[in-house]
Image (cartoon, rainbow, N blue to C red; front, side, top):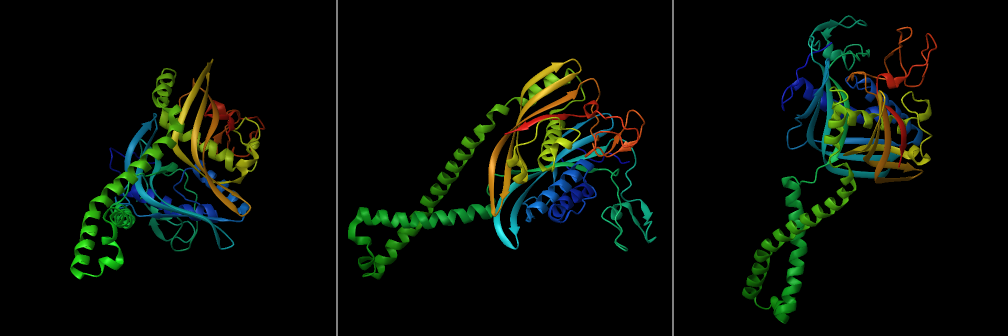
Length: 426
């Protein structure tokens, strides 16, 4: 049930609230295993696996999101849809502080200005129930369905409302290379202090003893004139020094970003190839699905038990991953068409946080992932492996940990409805 109230760049207040609430609920979901009721089933499953990984390491991973310059307002930047559902990627700029603790001791922390991306999926037709009146089935108090999504405020009872829309179906964060006004001012004064010292040292070298302290302070007038000249002239030097520093930083980031050069043109090539097979396919949907499957496999205790995974056991080092964030680049390197199936070899880039013993460290890594899917069945953007209808007996079951229908015993082949991951390695 639901309706499509996402249109254009602006998004309604109710959707913006859910996007912000998702961020504020993320730390509790990771550390305490709490549910985010408006996250879709697959994201909720990933968060539960993530929580178990954090718990097994005996650590805490805290996220704190600072308000952005846009006033915590998301904007829709891209969208895709099938016959029933529409998804939009919404973005906002935030400061993201991340802290890893163990027994109260801080093992790792960072604080970055970033772009937050969240995908919201909604149904195109229907009536949205958020503001409908509803009586809590536990205590009988009248409220709205929207209020019940996070539990009854009167009796505290929690409810499963997985079929309510819109849902958040994916999320990731990208570093924002720009500087806020306050950050530029802070950087400028730091550069000013450095250049003032260098400028004074250079003046001593050029003009000799005249700028030495013992001579400079003999004559008050001379001292004031000399210091004033240094301070004023240094304003321009500090400005150019700041610009030069930002230029060098941008060059370094550009060199680092060359690692993703193999992804250039992937979007166009993917859509051109796949849309000839099925108009329902989209690059954004595929990227979102690929990230979700990679995260699920990495955070799973035994990936070989997963229905959608058909590869070998993952590298043991991946069991030390405590956070993995998509770095904004996924290249489709190879396509193979075989009858009604397509196999796609990709290279995906992530910023990965590892925890091994008392050591926590961050890496920028590329993962090679191979996916396969049937091409003769339309895409269902709301498909979830946690809610599968058995084609043999029609029963619905959660296929995250079992590959056979618990009612009739027949094996369910997920490749009929969705992408499968057949290889994942560094």
